[in-house]
Length: 151
Image (cartoon, rainbow, N blue to C red; front, side):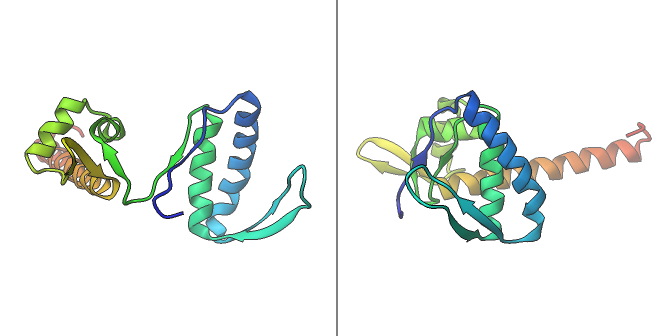
């Protein structure tokens, strides 16, 4: 499955209900490590298998999104994203993302004349950015406390 991109269509109402129910069950079990699952199909006999703890957490998150009617995609960390896909993942405009790329804040490469961003680099940037934001917020909170502003 190396290099594969798996995606679902936006779930219908029945799938949303099923996803919500499965998400609740998995959420209760997710703190207990591995989970034994019984898979059933129309044309095959039921099969039982074990999901590793990390897969349970991932599946729980995916089911929660599906229950809300949102499509879900699974991408490998070495997936090369277009600038629009990368901007969408960061919830920023494409021109803003391109500025960040050209400034060297996020590594990228070119495929012909098009910029591509590896998912792992985008995740690293997002985590660094979130850590900086938390640190600045902590600093502002400490200043407000030092000044007796009631925070």
